Amino acid sequence: MKDLLLINNRFAASAVLVIGALSINGCAEKSPHPENFGVGANPTLPEPEHDLIPTLKIAPAIGWPADKTPVTVKGTQVNLFAKGLDHPRWLYVLPNGDVLVAETNAPAKPDGNKGLKGWVMGLVMKRVGAAVPSANRITLLRDSTGDGVADIQTVFLKP
Image (tube, rainbow, N blue to C red):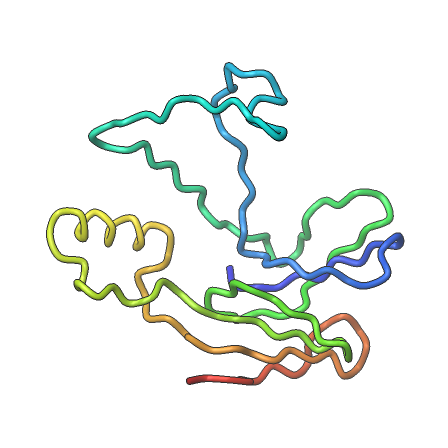
C-alpha cells in the first residue's frame, strides 16, 4: 500500500499524518526482562548476540481493504488523505496545511551489492518491496476543498 491516512483527534490542535503502508507488529517472543529493563540514566543492556546468520523477521505491509479503516480510540477519526505514493518516508506539514512527502527508496550502493552479502541483501530488499528504483522526490499534497482528502498531488522537488 502506498496510501496516506489523516488522523483527526478532538484533543489535538492540528492533524497528524501517518503512512498507511506501515504495519506495526510487536515481537512474537516475550522478553525475559522486566518492563523497565534498559530504561533510565544508566540502563542495563543485555550482551550482544554474535550469530553467524542473524535473525531477520520482516513484517509485511498489508494496508487496509478499500472499505475499511484502522480501528481508532474514542475521539479519533481516520480517513484516506492521499494514495499512489512511492515509498513515502518523511512528512512535513506546512503552516498553510499543505503536506510535503519525501518519497524515496534505498539509495544505490557504491559497490553494486557484490558477493554473498550483496546477494542476500538483495533478497531481503526484494522481500520488503525495496528492490525497485527510488522515486527520489518530494511531493506536495494539498486539500484545497477542506474535505480531508488531498485533491492536488504534484511533484514539488526532484533533483
